[in-house]
Image (cartoon, rainbow, N blue to C red; front, top):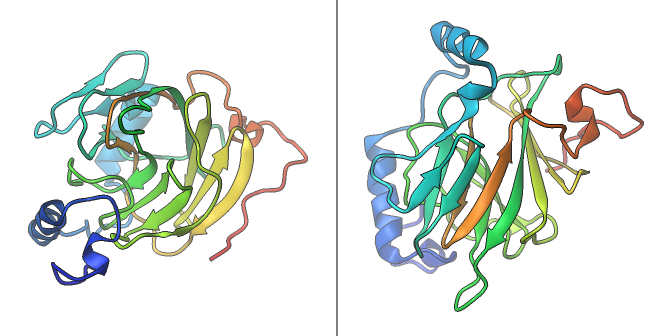
Length: 239
């Protein structure tokens, strides 16, 4: 997946060469999980906990990340960091997919505009990397609207940038391996489809910001995720 350290593509994103090398070492030490779905005992835990299963828990190695019982995640430091849900995603509301939304309630604009990443990732995931930059993860980034899928080299153009006051939604279908996004309740479409993974909901940032996570404790902006029949077309795959 990664190009050799020191190559042009190895530093094509905003990360440093040192972070890139640390990411290589992390991936070699912690290869992606071989199972495609959560173990049966983990599924039972998620079903028992309900929404509490998807509270976000900072990695012990990360600092400057504050979570609270209202499902908010606050990043306080100028550094690439991320935070994942405690348990993997499972379908809810009688749907074939799981879904969550992230409302950007605050973001730093000066002297550096914080870049936010929303998506899914398997555990363990390096706490010093934005979502989408390491295997296996998918991340939609706020600064330029690019989509990263196991990609440390710049991603691809996907959708509009987003910032304070915007809501990004992310859905995952474990039967098809499909990941899709919404922005302010509007479907953007599927971004990947293939082998399923035991994905966790995930957010990341490279500076101060506050994100409010909705895992179903309140109605979603994307109406179909509420289990309500609408005339909105279902997600369809586009490479």
